[in-house]
Image (cartoon, rainbow, N blue to C red; front, side, top):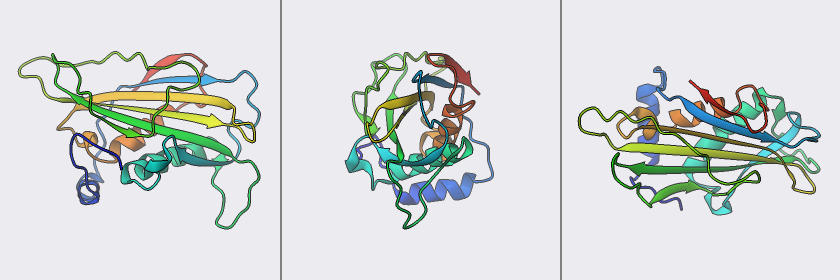
Length: 204
């Protein structure tokens, strides 16, 4: 079960989605870094499935929300999901992890985090983020979200592509507590897929 610094229920997600469905999510800029293997056969084509880095998260609402957003973007770049009952030998796998942290500007970040899985990645650890925080007036609590996707080839399980995305918003922003942020992060992560290996970009 995923632990959060606040209780996020299915009702909260549904209520927010109904209320904000017609609004644009204010997220950005999203910091994105991608890495690609020099020889990545089949990258951007064929059948792929989205798995959690931590198998225990597979049934959680948070994972399903982010996984659906990632699957949608994977379809845009050329992948497809297996059809019901379709037997596919050695499909590629997109291993997804998401981490959320809340903290008060000027203080140390909370050690309590939300994790949809967790991984250091195949191309080094950490995202090296720079956080833009407006300190005018009383600082608002911030929520930092990080997403990582590793596409693994089969049957060897070699990582052929890895992408990391991150953004920070105030805790009162809609995208801090709804599924809107998942779609925006996934869209930024796969923008211009596969991207220039090792380059960090800011996607507004």
